[in-house]
Length: 304
Image (cartoon, rainbow, N blue to C red; front, side):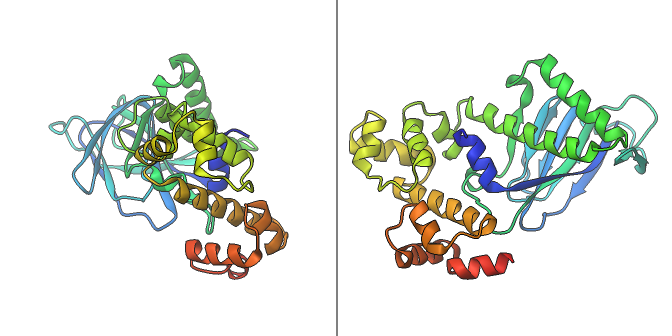
């Protein structure tokens, strides 16, 4: 499994669609701060609109754009024609999703609003390093024809109530999120984080090695050698790129892997400790409690 797929798998995100909006003219639709563990997203199927955050940031959304709020920030969907007539909103049920409209004419924007639920105890290693407003144009990642096909299928499945439609739509939302992460990683990134780290062709070699063998007693010298750098250069560039030290990354990754094993298997704590690179169960328990606030046994009990 490649690095990005593994990080997404550890995040255990559960996508859900909330409503489809076909809006025109002047409109403002507010979204309150989401509950912890809920990550709202918007995908523009056609047209354009603005997303205005509670902090006053405005993001122009065009066809093929994907936007996620990793920390659930309050925001509003705003029309791009503020001087146009404000029409009353109505919600009807169209197939699998409610449909919000405010007129009978051609909409200025067609978008799907949904959210990801972040399962309790799952890894936040990837999500914590995303910006408060994660905005990507999927057209820049996929050809317009490919994206049009995917969006067309998503729109079609959301409109009808065929068997398996919900499974198809939720799987496609996770696929589109993955495409957004990949597109972001392929572009120049201003903020440090895991996506910037994965986009660095030299540093990513060492990350691949760590994820392939998390139990290995990695040293800074070994990792720097894999990246063909000196220890000092490797440590400095890693922190500048990832926004964390090499040691913090190793610990966070191992705790994420351990959490997944505790939640999804019946393996003993000692076995899991060895799997993620700890010589003793006691050392693992101490590191896990420092990271998660509870012992491995208590963590597993809380999940049950």
